[in-house]
Length: 101
Image (cartoon, rainbow, N blue to C red; front, side, top):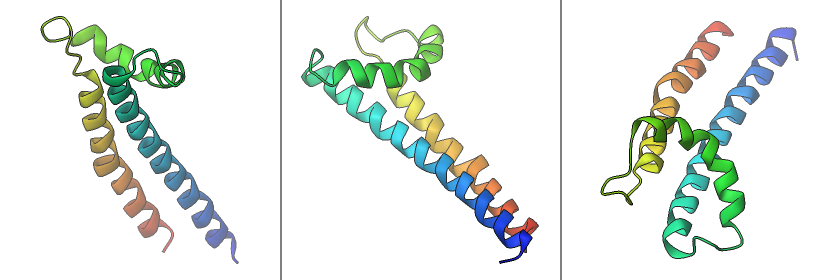
């Protein structure tokens, strides 16, 4: 493998790792939202809350719960994460392929 080939594989692996991390966060947010309705004091609640709250906290500063109880910030975070997957990550993948062709 040439130096450019190794660089391409390394950069492609970093991009894929970033994509996987975003997908894991999406699934954790969904699991946390469902668990907050079904079993808010369950054994996984603390772990899922600790994983999601750093991402939800900035959104909660600007978006109050509807009716005092319905928190839409998990849904908004999932939409933002999907947009990150669609726009910048796809652009980064295409740029990487064109750059190292």
